[in-house]
Length: 612
Image (tube, rainbow, N blue to C red; front, side):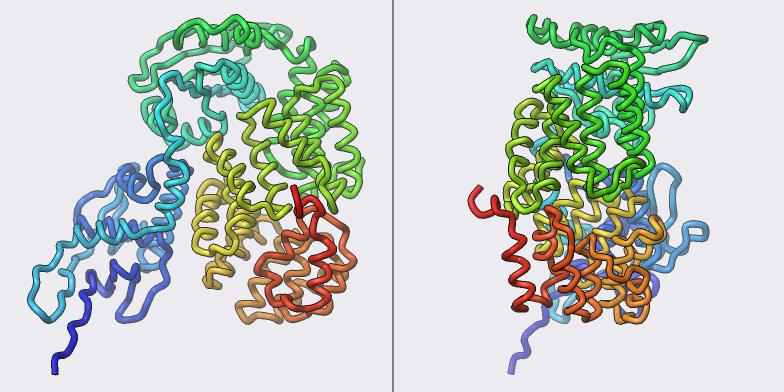
């Protein structure tokens, strides 16, 4: 009788560890060690070249496919930390992996040969086995394929980045960056990178113009520095040919605060003259346009944008106050009014309390502000975006008018990444996942560093594809590791992928990052219940009796088995546009077939989801 030969296992030994490259598994003295995909891939690359340095750039190219942009330093450091945790190694006293500061890493443990089958055959080298393992990383390859078409080098691509010597002037540097980039974006032959992407690239390679250019795929880097000199503001400008860091043009603008209003247009016109052929007269006229004639109102508008970008309750309230002051100084300043409306939308969507308005009133109040902005300027993309988002909350059963408002916003400004993102959210809530997926990817094409867009893709469009959902959330966390929002969504993605331990780690960290938040506590209670710690889950839930303002509260009740209580609260919950979508997530799978649950789904299904 012939005994069939067992398949070859591509196994490498080092120290007390064994690595099965084909299965993607790590063992310590025969016991399987849990390890995530990115740390495993780093380990495989180190095993390919034992004793040699593997540079950080080599790791970036291997782990994050071409065209993918994440906050690389943060992502790599986190992956190395997780790898060391799995191996029980230490950065301070390494036994296995040595850090070569700012350069790379080296495997310092002795590596044994791979294990061949009993029958004689030529054994593949370690490098070939590693290459095979890397090629099989399907999930990240899929994600990389999403971004690759957008990584082409732009002949007239420009990245704009202003900085301030004094932190008190950071709002001014950010404002100049946004305004100059926006004005340049109105010129068809100039391709401008979204400012948030440029800032992240600069943080990854501070001051290294060629590296930033390679990351962003641009030809020019416009650098500006803002500083106060007495009562005046001095802005130093350099337009660099990014590949060589040689200045094509430079200038110093010394202005009084009242003269800053026209500065973005002046800078934009000069840049256009240096990056190619003259722009058409219609585009040149657009470069000269100003949104207000009040320098003081403009200053408050820039401050409001700076605070709103922080996305926190207190900073959003400060942004609203700044926009109100800008409107008081110039009642026709439509951009500031539109931003005030969007700040109300952000507050409503995130349950932020503004000082003079209950959360339930924010949608109606914000709509009044959006309509006021549109009466002053019906071509304001931001005002239409705010109107679309607020209509969804004001009319949660139908979301009537929301889709049309977003379509108008995007028609007016196809490069408005925020509008594409929020439109994607609305479409997901309507159950139109393919369209939502498209809009969220368009948002990421414009701004690949949007952690929240990765989160929404994982939370709504791809929640049932658990491997992809986790990979998307890994990208979100790499971009914003201190975000409780990203951590709580990754906790749920990991939970439904079967990684209960990883889910609990994320949920606990989210709770520490944002203590006392009922939504975060609901996620933690859900994860604890699935981890077998129902007692602690119930102790958390006892702190919010009767609360029903977010579907995740009821998801926690389902997780501990309190089905009737969950349905009671759901039936009393205030209508919000995403409740129907939330009830269709895995947290409520245990209720499928329950008559009360099925009636709720039918009642909450948005009317426009049927035929729009």
